[in-house]
Image (cartoon, rainbow, N blue to C red; front, side):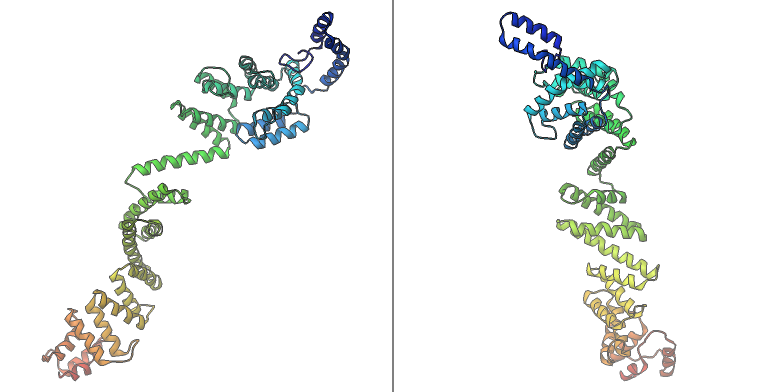
Length: 491
């Protein structure tokens, strides 16, 4: 035991003493061992002299950070690189990874071989330079029972010894064990003591990665002890403040989940809720999609009432999302109704406030497609007398208005003008007369259509003499019922 790797370490003087006792009792193997012992002792002493007072350090430290962060494969790669560079501590961690299947395949034989080689040198480092990392690693050796079996009590003593000398990894393991009541195999044998856990974790302050690791530990323990949740957030916030990207991402996720819960329970929303949900929804989550649809319908209705250009534009975004994504008939209908009104309002705004006929036509068309009859008449008027004048289209939409039952009198009147003056169609007095009469019958109170209607029905027109009437129509700006059309009907 004293000659070879054991938990008690190498001591050739003690080994020689025990071999002599065995040889005196006739043990042949002991006699052979005594012959080999001087050469082994010489080799060992030369090797010990080659051990640096402190290990290489960078590989070990970086590897430990990766391991604590849960990036096990990266940790094993760093330890392996350190091992190639004769970093004793990294070499030991390679054995631990092989033994515990951490970031690499399980290989007990190779792990045992490394431990047999490295254990005495770790012990020398611990004793020679009071190296706290070496002491900590010896505690892991006892805790995981490399080759010699578990000794959790000794592991606790060594870890405390290392922690007392401010070793951050020892303090992390000790604090973790206090936090979880020593519940897991990788914990030390202690009872839960939150104050002691906090005291141990205090040595970690300032290291963003380890602060995040502590936050995660409190988050995990909060599943058993709800009071740990607030401390978890404190540690994660501290880590984020010190630059840990993962901590920042987790805080964002926590904020998102909190807002989601508030939205699920609420019936009142605003446009910031729509923006928030659209930013986080990436598809696939049915609950989130349904919530977003609900919020869009609610906010779209609110924005529509505000009736300013920005709000109307935002309401359109809300309603269009519902139409494109909902599978429920009633939701789609509500959204279409909202779009119909929003498109119409935007069109009116473009026509009357921004004086942009092309944009007005674009939105009147959209509103018309969703069944807004007034949008159809507005289109007809824009094509009849707006900047985008197009009499053929005006006639199409005026005729559509007469079919839809919207502004029938006015539509017939303007159709009469088109056919009389040949606006977009060949001149046709009979059709013009027909539309003027229809305008009168639908109650459009324009003197031109009344005059034609009376003349056609055989009533005497007595308001003006022919000359006065002719003078009157010369002063009209809009196309009017012409004098000769009235004369043809017997006035």
